[in-house]
Image (spheres, rainbow, N blue to C red):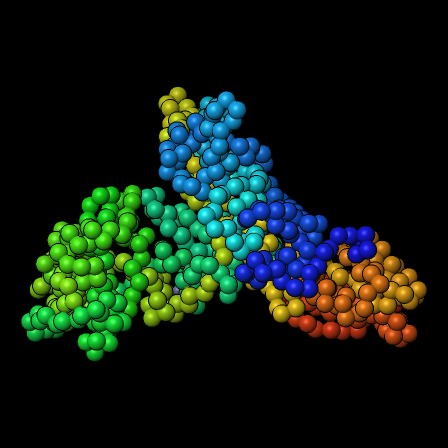
Length: 576
Ligand SMILES: [Zn+2]
């Protein structure tokens, strides 16, 4: 492509609305433009990157034996009512009516539609397993869409669904998708980890998220530095060393703590370590009160609590409920004499005593509390977030907590949708059985943004060669110099004949301006043709990622370039 015949409206200034780096750079590089809140148009450069990501996803899905379909984005409410999601999905589901007053929504996902399709098609065990996918726009009416393609309202996704006869088959399908995802994210040139995610009611390791590591990630993940263990924070198990405290402490005493609410305030006021203070957190689990105790310097993990209670819904207690159960103002709840029957405590609380807790009395705390002696604890369980001090749950190694951006998710659904929508088949004995499902998502447009979040510098984007809109920026430095232009044209045709995606900057602009744009646009390879170099029979090449510049002889360019290209690909873990 020639720059002069292309449309790349780069901007010098970053639009004020952009908060994250990928959003800023996508706008500056002229890859996307906002139509309205959370909804974007892809300009030619942006669409090239998007299409390259989609092509890799499609190839690997096809290779894994999945069949591509395309389902409508407009979905009838009736299907969503069958699974009760019409009521439970919340305001992210954009609902509207047609001229006949019938309810519809814009699909944020397609479980209902695909299950409806299958129950109308699949009759016999002979038709299973089946694995269908699509690459389709989704719509989620985010309350505050921001961050550009990272969290838009409309976004491009690959969503896939597997259908199996039994649990064993579903596990095979899951594994196949897991492997396909590993190949996809490797081919995209991204630094990623497959992390164990919470699979809720299904249990087991049947939910993995694929996270692109980036300093600007929105989720923290726990990664072992010694083994392959990786899990998101919700799921990462905290292993307790098992040492039960046998020390005894003196009797409980009341201390006045006027106006001291937070752990830090109480710790400072009573001059104790925040590790010795217990937070008493009150929840409502499916209508029943539950209290949870964790150390003052720890974070309660609500997903672990939800799994422990087995409740469908766990909510923080309201101030009225707190006042009722504690007989005290909010902020002074404690386990001694608490009007809540179910009290869970984090595992590690067995390893110490002499705690400071709320007194269930205004402006008062209790000191010298021994949980076994002074409180009624229903049970001890892993209820908090993992920290850097905790060992890897699999090998005992050191844990790190990098940030990640979720770009893919594989999930064993079980019979959640097939049961409520009656998707069944007849087995070998003519017996009716429920189909076992799995679902598998990849955020195609999100990947473009995540790749930029992971790979950028002060000058702009740095694209992996496999998804760069153009692999090579070919810069004709002095476009008025006929020899420069002629050589650049020749190299352009040569590269194209080699199957290399190349953008020829043939604009009559200053060299500095062109270099800036090339860096901003982030093609992994730059080839520069200038008058001075040509006098000596050389070109200049630059590796955008390393910044490494070299001279390359014009004679024998083809071979030298292809060798260099291989090296650049290899740096991204890719094969040219
Ligand atoms: Zn480990």
